[in-house]
Image (cartoon, rainbow, N blue to C red; front, side):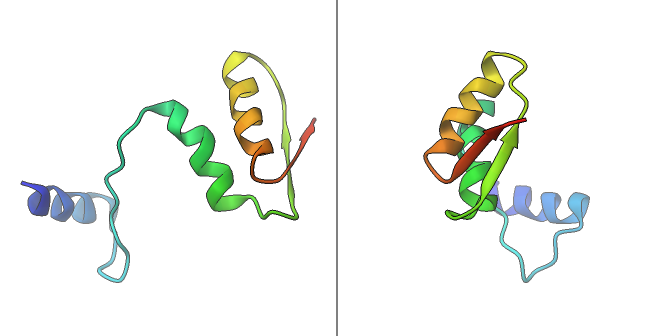
Length: 71
């Protein structure tokens, strides 16, 4: 089942064979950590517009990785 699912994802999303497909557990809150871990350099910073509780959560996670500024 997993192999067929990966094949379907590759076909639907146009993912080439030299890329890996990851199936990760977790909901939207997991993305609060994954985005800064993958895109925010340790010596860089990210600008956040804090418009609610979810953005505030994301900002807290990003602070663990690099600099955070409130835009």
